[in-house]
Image (cartoon, rainbow, N blue to C red; front, side):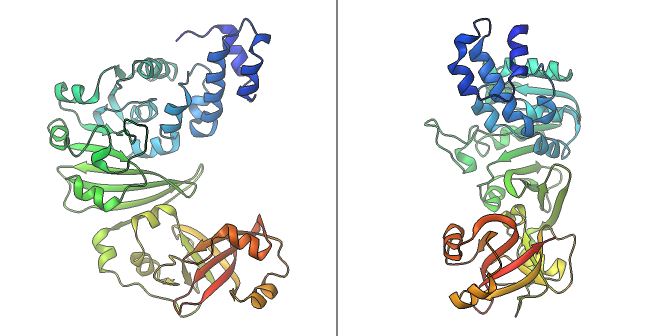
Length: 392
């Protein structure tokens, strides 16, 4: 764990340098532990946006890139930490320790469990560097610890989503540890279990496999689905609330509904495009909250499979992107030529359309970017159209 003062200074002085170039010229710096410096510089570069409070602390030490790639971002870790509270939480799959460091603000006592000795050592060092003195680190197998531990308020588990060959897996039962297989053992140790799963997993299949589901949180960052969280609560599982969350650095969007509400809702469809266009954020789409959006916000869907909505009145709290409609065109070549005559670049999005975005850029002779947004989609009557929108 020791890094010399010379190497520490080198890391901070070269924080923005290319690590491959530094490694190639290692002979120029004989007093520097270059392999360590390269790993730390690369780690700090990755942490700058993902883990800002860690990045700002010069004493934090980073592991090789895989553990850093797989860990929660600080933004998502802070969100999940607010879902639970109490005296003691056990993090059975500690990893880099980002989640534990955020849970430490909500609990009196955290037990971090990690079977990889090196990661456990790094976590213990970093918790100390970050001033987190209420976390115990335990270097052992999660299942072994679970079998012997005393009951606690909350258990958190983020099972590995890779098989023994390193390939990705998405089913709950294929992850390690297998939450389905140890479900009863988990509940013999706590009434509340918080599980982090792959955002690629089917939400409702996971709910069926895991008993006592109380809350589902689908968390996106900047419009990209990052985490699927299931809060299992033996004492509060009569109904399941589904929380669709989109986090940004300085803001967030939230939409909460129940599955039964979606099933019983009747979606309204638009006969024509109105003044405003709405695209739900990734979490809402992942949750399949299609009909309930129409009912809650009084908006009309363009087509059953387009997942775009329209309205005459602006709905400022809609959970997604909002555009003022500047016009739309059929996919006829002549119509498009007139419609796009003043445009040389645009952001093209495809929703329920027979041509991919990359191909559309070529066909329409438009480079990517700028302030204009084009949505290629299908209306309720089956017509393929290109919608031009101004983002609000």
